[in-house]
Image 1 (cartoon, rainbow, N blue to C red):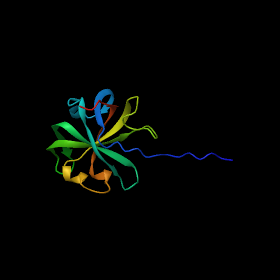
Image 2 (image 1 turned 30 degrees about the vertical axis):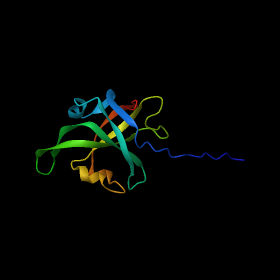
Image 3 (image 1 turned 45 degrees about the horizontal axis):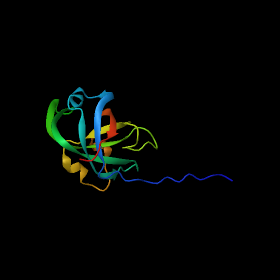
Image 4 (image 1 turned 60 degrees about the vertical axis):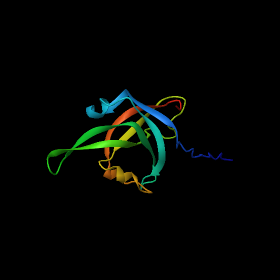
Length: 135
């Protein structure tokens, strides 16, 4: 008889997390902002079914990306970022830190959806993520 694995989806809403530069790869501009801390506001599934966590940052920061069409840089303020574990079945906020994908939106309103279109966001880095005690 074959054993069935049961996966329970634990919500991380309300969890305090921090991102730092250990095992970091990505935008130098974002790396200058680390460490970042915040609280998981909610989870948002993508159209492909992958669930991301929306991290509301304690301290927003200014960021810029190159507009490849207009050949100029666009600046904006980052209040929230979208993250998810890079590893299958490794949750955010576990005992051990985990590496996460970090995605940024030019417009914070892009997060006001039931399902997120990750192609409308900017993948900017991998970062180390760990749970912080509640304040």
